[in-house]
Image (cartoon, rainbow, N blue to C red; front, side, top):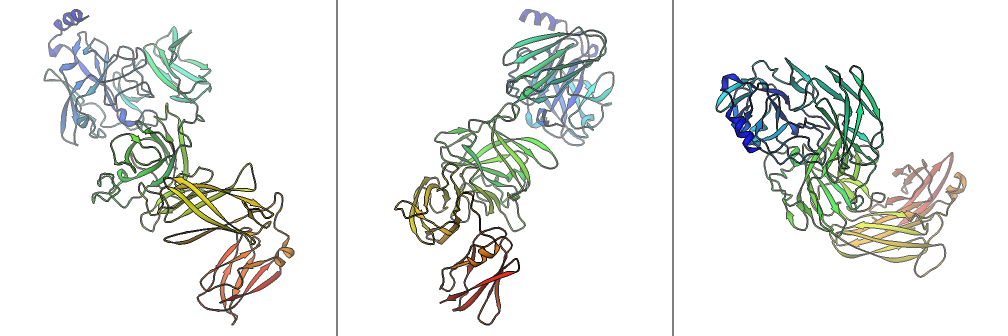
Length: 616
């Protein structure tokens, strides 16, 4: 083979007798072929072989200036014989593609003829200056002499996702680098597993067969074609997640990826999205991702997502992605691990066990969006976590009142337990502005209250709560680590040493005290099938507790009904406060800083009842 190459090179004609031209340009990406996969296709349209080591690209640097760039062979890992990555000699009639991305079998969806030579630009920086409205500056040198200048090329590509293709004139067409322009394969890029595949093949001449190569199985299937083009086929899709088909017809090719959109990652429920900052007030990137302000420009490069590793293992975030969907667009965005709360700022992709990590996001993140975290590129990875915010009961990740972030509280509580709130950012720390508690009744035992709690002031060990009902009091211990504590409270209707005795529909409270103060959370237990009494009976059972009460203390108004009106008067008949509960619940009244007798009036359905409360 080496001798053959030497012979071929010995017959390379003088510069004036051959033509090397730019024959395809792509730089404006879509969801499936992103703009990072920018490329130039070069075509040898004469009869002599060319040595691509002698080629220099002239690329736009500004609207008026250019920069030169040579070629190098890249680390391209391909499906089978998709293209050639280790040859320099471009034979007559063949094409070379210069692409800055290192291709791998994971999920790239560009396709090539099997004779295409793939190269990388020697300087990625020179390659990445904007090409929009500057394509007329493109040129080629061979052995230091200019052999092509794109004087007649349009200055830009008008339709996003299309390539500018030369075929006896310039036109916008499907991206088909390194392929025969006389044949077009029209098919989807990505389909759900098992879905039927509709394929159309257009050709300027008749074709005899159509081939499908399937990976990773490496199987092949040949379909005969008859008659005149165009040809249409409908095939059953692959049932396997991440299967890739390469369709081939007349030296043209097309990739299809099949995805099980419901397939969960092994990390699902173990790696949790815990905090989102979409409108930062700090230059986090300029601050070295320490959480401090670098004092420079604040932009989308400073947006971040915090994740909680709830496992006991190191998790590699190498090549993890985010699917980002807003009302305007959907995109795939790469992620980088910037900070580990156990080790500090990091360029390592490993997140420590039971740790919080900060991820930066290419092109930032929206204030309102649906985000899906993948353990790889979405075209081959699996879903780890999903969050829609800015709708329903999850607020947008921004506010008009200074810098805030959207936070899961407690930060590593399960999805069906956690709540989402806006607080000042807690970069790599436990979420919330103070102790936060969420609770739910066990799905298997309606006498068991499951409790998850966090306290930014406490990392490990245990927390002590007091549970109070209208007739009982018990202590509860929660245990945990990394600022998240879990425990249970057993409920009983009768007296029991290990359970809180409660009334049906009665008021119950969880109390917690730390150095910052006292905190309380109310809950109600009701017998299965029981609901609050009818209006007349309910009004008669209205309860104020405690009574008498202290100044500047909490008084609970219990056994209320939705949309009742509660008015509190002082002894002079002046209205102190008014309430209208939006559901059956207990309301809390903060008593005034003065003693006296107060009247609590409840009105509903044309009926009313009142209670006198003594404040001492």
